Length: 253
Ligand code: IPE
Ligand code: IPE
Ligand code: MG
Image 1 (cartoon, rainbow, N blue to C red):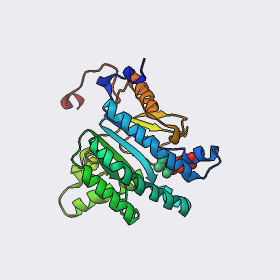
Image 2: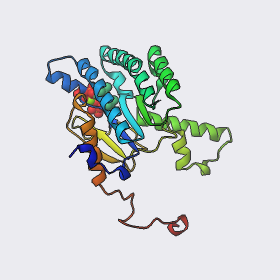
Image 3: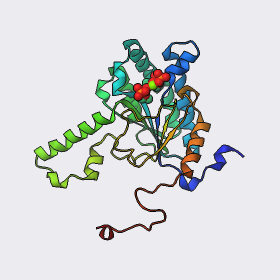
Image 4: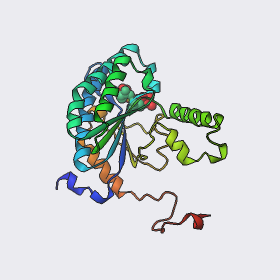
């Protein structure tokens, strides 16, 4: 049976986040420079987006470059940024035709100007699309995001627009980079590493985690489908008991 037909359309994850890892090791295995792996990783993104679109997953987030990745050798960082500009340039028209909305999270001001402008143009061009949102985390780290959100909220308090007692989950969510995007239901990390590496620490609170040894440049739509099938076998309880009817707020109190 076609792998895709094993997916239960009624239990699709609304948002899948991906930590794309293993490009350097993939290149090394082939006796090539690390950038060779990053170049091949673009095809993996393309195939993942295409497959998610076909299945009907509404949100994807790709962790493309972390705050900590700035500390890599300058040549790797520069080539990665060039690759990014090129990928946005070549991929955006097709993404737009297919109803994909591009978004980005992270410290975009820290990106090289050329890169930032390309990204902003792609975001503006695709902003009205509704089929699938592709969110790219660039110069992103969850601690940076949380500190930034705290600053925004503190500023509101300082301006007397908000009292400390009023600060709740919703205020915090709205101050995060991901405001308006649902929390991921499923996180996929490639390359066999079993860690989160400063990614979406707030948003992953109840996300199902899926780790695969596949290196990112080898990742394809079939791997995404395998992850979704595994996700659909899990029982999500959110701290409650199995089969517990939904409680009203009054009952909880
Ligand atoms: C992921 O692959 C891409 C980025 C972090 C930009 P890596 O470059 O981390 O590859 P490995 O983990 O060294 O193999
Ligand atoms: C995580 O991968 C960041 C991205 C995929 C962009 P890293 O390769 O930077 O993470 P560590 O260093 O293995 O934790
Ligand atoms: Mg890595």
